[in-house]
Image (cartoon, rainbow, N blue to C red; front, side):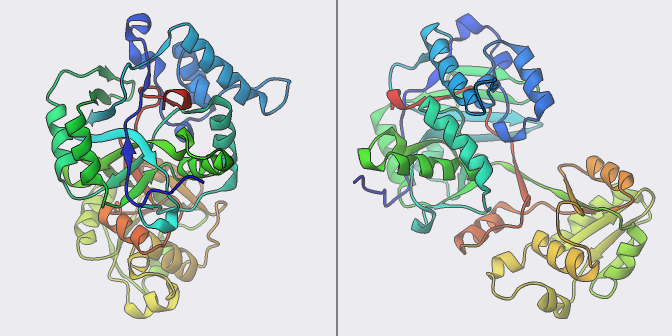
Length: 422
């Protein structure tokens, strides 16, 4: 029976990487994570290059049945390796991975994360998972014997690991490519034993929070359980990007809500019983500035329609006590997104909190367009700070669905971990 790590472990591995001399422009073979690519995106990335990574992570099936797509992915991975499209690095490494876009730079370490159950308090989730995506990713990983794309974890604190990441990024990179979303990606290998030992010692006592990849981490655990009778092995680790939020961490964006069939004037009127409501004369642009300012001192929301916008602030303690469940952690109860769902949507607006009524948008323009199309109200939120996400995770709670968007996301195809290479 394999032992479970008692600390945060990120182990070196021999990455499988595209042969750039053969491929040429690496951007043509890379793609975003599987869960943000729609069918049109699959077709676009398939057309970009016959060896695009989307063919591995979202493979096509055929008349042989729904599981044929996983067999096709495994066969394709084997073919690309035998043809020299994908080649392994000669030595195990931790990889420094830098992403830069719009003046923001994110850096972290990519390695094999030692898998621990959530109740160990080492790797902390902040969202729940659904069985469908887990079953899909499990079938793919089991067929390919590979982690085709990394999950994304964050921790806080600086220290030797962050210092080594910073100094490594001053060297000549192994990979330097800019993708179609204008994100620059650079990768370096850390192989020096002294540096690897220093990183391991620094990370060991820390906790990490899953920023992106809850379903895939759960899949890692299920795959490990499938191999439990075989003892220890490569299935005891999962491909992970680990970034320090105190140095070069991610950006966190809000995911806005759209309340269908509720006009903004009515929404503002009903909110007056629990909030200070102020009409914004300068439109949504001015409203967003006011929203950001108000968010510094407490929960705040901007509700908007085609020609009106209102700022909602200072919810009363009586309303919060009435609407927000008291049996959850203070960190969870204080989240803007928690109060939005329980006090605004369910209590004051008396709207059913389901996907038929509540839509989700990743940017303001999308939210406003959705609200206009649905004769509804765009409910615009401030981003949830990383430390608030961590506080909820440490308390053992889960964020409301679609609460946070961490960016930039790691690009798929840069580093692949296969079980035969460790």
